[in-house]
Image (cartoon, rainbow, N blue to C red; front, side):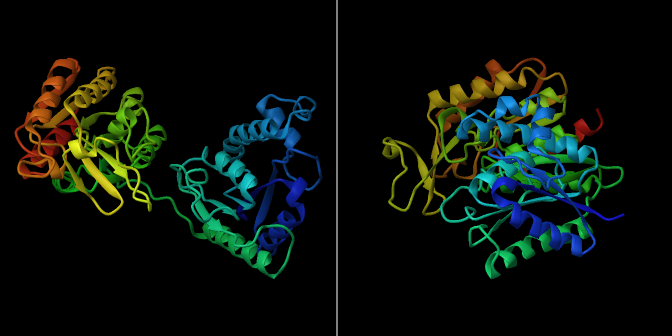
Length: 408
């Protein structure tokens, strides 16, 4: 049976280009499914019209039509995001693409973000370039993004080439993309790390891997990685968490470069996923330095710090910040009803905070450990190791606690 490629487009402005893309796909023996997210005028040519999309969302076109531009785009974006996973569940398509300008791409990407991991998704936009953030198109999903170079406004040698490339990529994904199951007999372990915690994390994961009980999947806790891990938890793809780097909670609480992953830990709590939690890089805040040399806080000279590179500066947190951050972590872990073990490195939660390092501050470390002792609930097993997070003794303890969870 021929695979189907869905095209999300605003036919009231991009009908000619969309139908051309559909013809490219159909000539190769694939089926197409056109999803029209027009907000201005109704035209023919779609497999599902704006009227039908809005109706599924609970809004009639007669109520939608009078809305202003901003409001209509907002409503249609939400409606498309509501409907797209329904269409996928109904078997309407195997791959989804969008080829257009900025607004069409943003609306389409918002809808694609509601689809599960491994459903092939491509956004092609004339605004996927320059200093514009990829967050609006990708977020924490597996979305391919292509810069169209020229605006998709009319058919010419450039736009036809771009459309052909996007359609070819979609057909390749439809034909050859594959979802791999987890290794038979193994649970999937989701782990977090940063460069400053990677040695300890990877040593622990190596010991865990040797047990043969787990398949390890690692996420970069940079403001997106934590979100990615938790999305996969919601989809049921992760069985146990080794949340070894909670740096995103520091950024959520007091600011910093790795922002964007709010409410960390709560997905595992709500979905009753067993966890071994380590406050990795919780004791540091990082700042991004732009090309003008701006971005550092006014108190930078008072903070113990180390420059990760010319753009990022890692700083030790203050004692009062430690209290505040620990309170957030404990308030979330205390809600857990599934097994949770909290393993704390008493001699620093990141590489530079080890004894003798530029961010070593035993007073802050002591405040953090004491705060965890006072605030963590009886539902959480607390283990304190007299070591830095990257020392072998600490990794051994973490691995041991994860393996204990495997048998619960």
